[in-house]
Image 1: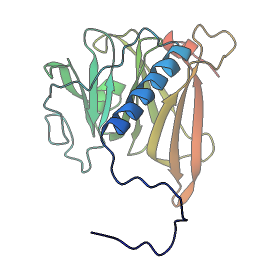
Image 2: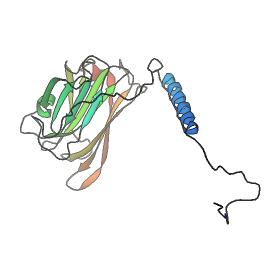
Image 3: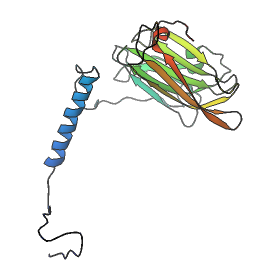
Image 4: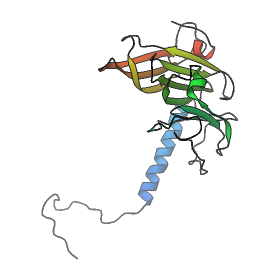
Amino acid sequence: DDVEVLEGLNAGDRIVTSANFLLDAESKLASASSMQAMMGRIGMADWQMRGAYEGKMEGMDMGSTGCGNWIPADQALAVGDGTNPVIQAVNECIRVTNLAGAILGGPWSLQSFFGVASTVSVCDPRALFDWRNHRFIVIAITCSAPYTSKVAVSQADNPLGGWWIYTFSSISSTGAIMDYPRLGQDHTATYPGSGFAGGIYIAYNLFNPGYVHEEWHILPKGPMYAGGGFS
């Protein structure tokens, strides 16, 4: 059937009336090539671009043994490159599995993991894996007094091994309640005397009792990965 075009085209303009998937597929291949080049520039050239892991595993939820039945569960997940590679945390517990989903450790309460009293609520976990230094980083906040943030760094790439635990209070609003923690890292920042380049970044909202502001902590990996102190 004929279609009359009343505006938007000029005489002699070229129009596409049909196309096929090849154009989109070529675009995806180009994007993958660009991603591979970018990974090479940041020191990950030995990593291969692979499709998503096709297996599946039974996840942990807030109703699992040792958890607090919190809604929402606030899940945190980090996958490393060792033999015990998967950490999953929810309110208020944490466990370690392999890629097939077999439970290797836990679930443990976040209270026992961070070494606090069982009467203290520990919630809102976040986790990531530092692939350059082969360390796991897990953070959470205490959702009951005394209000603090907790940071755990693994002593190796095995989350079933030892951890260094750090506790931070608000530096800008004494006694403030923390909420909605965020976790990040970099591999390039340098700190005097640090054996590892890069920092750990945590942030959260403060309420005392109403909203105060957002607070950030920029923490050096070097002393933390060695279990040392810093200021």
